[in-house]
Length: 77
Image 1 (cartoon, rainbow, N blue to C red):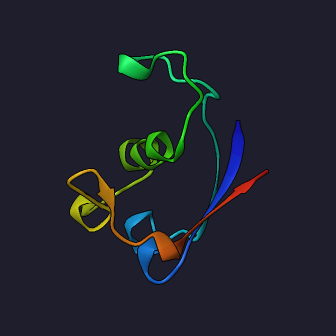
Image 2: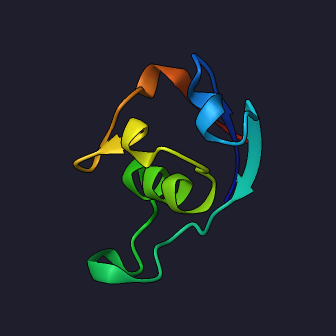
């Protein structure tokens, strides 16, 4: 699945100071208790945290919850 991710409101500072990222993620999960299930926003947020985030993860996710959803825009490519 190809997506365009846009960060704003200062959130881009955590992602290499880059506002827009084009990414490709699997359409189904390949591990864990959700194996084979379609990916969801929870998967995407953790994928961004593990693969794109460059610093200060505590400012992006805390206790499994996204901090600033209004500064994140997700578009299909």
